[in-house]
Length: 230
Image (cartoon, rainbow, N blue to C red; front, side):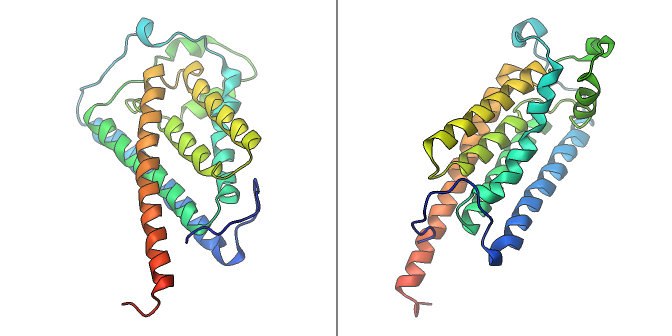
């Protein structure tokens, strides 16, 4: 089978022979995201059709720039995934789930581009967190609001980081996910409906990546049972 029974662990270094593969899977997911995300934005600029959610109907939480720290903490969570997954195959499945999320979202970004909440009125604000907020905000593009890839990728990351982990660790990781999802709304990066869309996309991506992982596990098992079978 793909996974052997292992002592419980939270984080650990990948097996020495697999470390390069772990890094390659993570880099591929990152490059795939950057390519699709900004390509979708460029394509969407070729037409003027936009879906705009009324401010009074989609935004109920007050703006709070200090949540920028939580928003960018997703990159820490993703980096720690390389230490949390149980095998090279599971690391690949995590990377695939991120790519599937991006692929589904890219189609929506191109065909049904949705504007983010307006932030122009925030430029008059000042404070210790505003500079960090604006630096973070510049990495986002317009018309790529629904579904939230920030939420989708965080959910995929948390899901794969918590397989066969202690209950306390899983609870902490899902609390981290909820905090990141909340931050996307209070920072005016997304509406609540974008968060819901991101969760649905992540669920579909996780299910499909798990299906492929289970299929590979069966193939490996059959190969072990029948080593001479071609």
